[in-house]
Amino acid sequence: MRNTRTASLLAIGTVATFVSALTPARTFAASEPSTAKDPLRQYTQQQPRWERCDADSPAAFQCATLKVPLDYSDPGGRTIDLAISRLKASSPESRRGVLLLNPGGPGGPGLTLPVDPAVTLSENVKRQYDLIGFDPRGVGHSSPVGCGLTDDEQNMEHPYHAETFASDVKWARTVADKCHTKVGDTLRHLTTRNTARDMDVIRAVLGEKKISYVGFSYGTYLGAVYTQMFPRWTDRFVLDSAADPARYGRGMFQAMAERAEPAFTRWTEWTAQRHATYQLGTTPAEVRTTFWNLVARADRQPVDYDGTLFTGDAIRAERDRFSRLQKAATWFAGLKKASEGKKPTEQPPSPLPPASDRDVPSDNNAASAWAVLCADTPTSWPRDPEQYRRDAIRDRARYPLSGDVASNVKPCAFWKAGSEPGTTVNNDVRALILQNEWDPLTPLAGGRAMHHALRGSRMVTVAGGEGHIVNGTNACADDSATVYLTTGRLPAEDLTCRAPSA
Figure 1 (tube, one colour):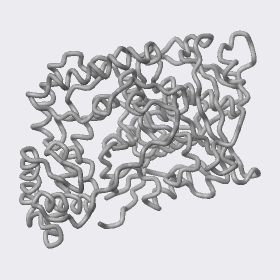
Figure 2 (figure 1 turned 90 degrees about the vertical axis):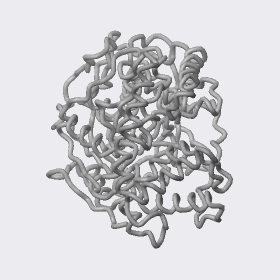
Figure 3 (figure 1 turned 90 degrees about the horizontal axis):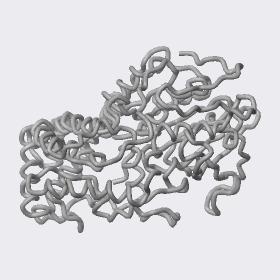
Figure 4 (figure 1 turned 45 degrees about the vertical axis):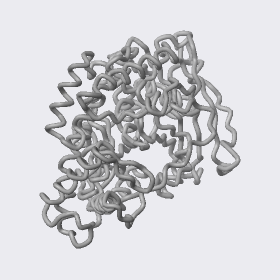
């Protein structure tokens, strides 16, 4: 998940209706004849009113608002807004369709992605596609939800300690209760499956037979669910930093904790070879001891690092850093100097700037993230708080960096079920999966699992690739995505790209 701290297709020529095997709600294709039996026609036949998104964006970047049903099994019922954006293909004569973009999350707004400099797309891709951004339902400008959560209640980092477990349970229950009180029945319908249905409404409204797609992190799961529900309308899908579709939910957090351990071991080995630079130990064992000694010391007396107090738990919470060797060594060496009263050589990064003045609840990111995760995967979350206690104790022993955080109680333990069962991803739709070897948030094993579930896919692995998200970090991987999006050709076989040596 992007984190703020996210086989040949069937021919299209026939009149067809896709019916999901897991829900009674019918999802109609835009190519169906206009009949009274098409309850989605009022949505698929909308005419978007495009306007310039804002004065600070390029004039060609346009936004519109669509209506979609809150509950697709009741399309005549309540509607919600869906904010979409468009940057038209730069070469009308070369245009081949639309490319939807999703940043991850869940809970990540994607309206500005077509003009976001953090998204690297080649000029050839921009020549051929209208770039389409959208805020998923419940997020950003798309009928945003909020639960009235305080800053502390939005913090999901809850390490296990016997003396604080009761307060952790209270926190999880409070978040769930606040959301159900504030948002009500809407929560049941904030699901990945419904967001996929919204994507298909976008496709129909734009008059496209198929959509292409680039999704990051959680966006890979969303994309995979779309391919499962709408294989006929799936064109070229790039899934960057893929989540394991079978472990999506609680298992996703646990997978992060599992992967943090070998990343930490790799970091101790690399750092020990550079003791002259970082002064953290001459052997991996010494580096490991230095780390855990500082964690223990910070638990007794928090370390003031450029105005931020780091407890031992807060240091462990920085587990994602260890996928990036040099940056982690520099950061931890500075933290150690600060603990010794010395001025660090590197200052911690400045806090993220405040959110823009969008008219959305301040807790929208957290509220929508929990809503989707909990509604999507109710069976993956135990209902007995004591099960979380046992799992947290077990996983702290197995995965000392963050096993207890991953397995500790979460709001989903007290969440009401979503509107339908989740999705089993298992199809032969063509897709391209991009994966860093040392991704801390969507580990390599998850990308391989997604590749296995999407039998028509190819996978590009960046050997030695560090950090979350491949896009824009490796020319070899970026080129493979460009070739696929512009020509439709997947690599003949799975491909390994090499990251520059650290």
